[in-house]
Image 1 (cartoon, rainbow over the protein chains, first blue to last red):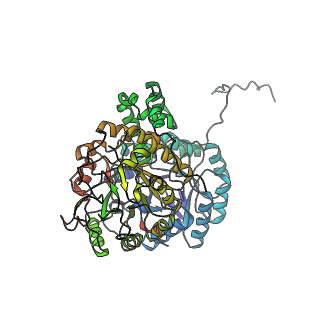
Image 2 (image 1 turned 60 degrees about the vertical axis):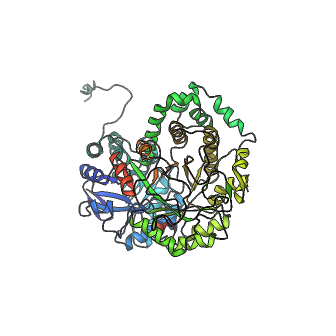
Image 3 (image 1 turned 60 degrees about the horizontal axis):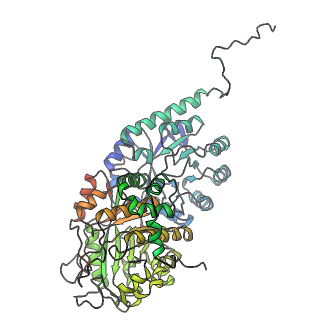
Length: 255
Length: 370
């Protein structure tokens, strides 16, 4: 079981809610993914409106609601969004996104740290979205982040684990859960992240714009399980030379 | 202070660059990871006409990857049809004797409420240029009244100073659209006979002033049917690239207004067909996969239905181009005749039928609360 800030999850696949062809399709895909943690952009919903198209179909008993601050250009905006969300019944958890460049949507390390410090002091459970920067991950951990969410590749690109070496360092050093977020384009990418020891992955675009999003969600579910099982089983060492699977040591003479 | 945006001194150089493109250049552009200005010239060229299906596919893939299977819905709210400018193509031109109107604050709010009830959350405030009747104070008051009710408020009004844009941003205006109409300076002087708008360079520098003021998004565009659309497209690409470099925090959008029938009887100087318009849209999508592309009710329903998913990311819907026309019909003249007369609900249903989600809210006014 994965535990973040005292809450346990049996699924290690987190999902997003953007880019789907319809809200009904989004709902089916989420169910098919087995995900228990779903992130929603606060800008996309109206928490005051009981008829809001997304919140209406998002069963909060089944899916833990993780609002995100997508669109915030700086720490102040992100903090304001998180506080309004909490005041409107959005809870104390927040996926912190501070992305001042509307083209790459890469996260701002300085303001992400600033906002994390403020929000943690304010009682929030903060899951910051970051570039795969090991020192920043440690700084956020010290600031009280409940998890860190390094990106695999720029968001929406489906390019897989371009930041693999950095994420390996983050996983090795982290005392909080590491959730690989953004850029995972195929179940094999998610499996690889889990094999490396990531605690969870977050997938949105690769599911939402797949030919069959419901089926792809199920495929990611399996990929995440396979990767996690492989990590727990302990992968064999990688070698460049051939190595017999039934070893003949040739050292029997040694007494 | 960096130098303002400028095009090559000889505007004809853009057309020459486009004319020099070859099919090999088009193929290179179609396969490029990063599309350069030379690639854009190739994609806009006659050499690319045979590649329109390939351009559409690439544009579709890039749009889907970035924006997903969604289309954002917005509507214009015309505040005033008074105008001091004399622009040959525009129904609001000062020399046209039309029934003009400038809404009061209450009337503007009534119009906004009507649109809100119809499901509009992204509102574009539009007006002619007559600062004595509708200055920045009025727009500021409108914004302050409306901002809590709408996800985003954009303006398409007369160019303002940077300080005025700062004021409007604080009042809740999120983005500014200002179209150069034509980037060809000689043609520009022929089209704009009098008024502040006759100053080509002041208008050209307006997007930078709005971006410097902190606006989240700047919309640019050229009025299609005045000059060579290919050269206008290349100028738009250069303008986008310049804005991108100088204002990296600012989102960008491009509109593709084709000339429509309007009071004054102006006819397009050069024809721009749907194929031309499509080539322009696809070329700009390939040039900038992240830019928002707007296709308004100037285009008819059949074309807009077909273009869902191929490049555009925002559609206006249920539009009226006369001030006061939502709550009360036929009180004033319209700026131009629209060509997609469907209701907002009908446009949304058609988008859904194409397998896309018509998104009514994708922003929140609380981003700008202070």
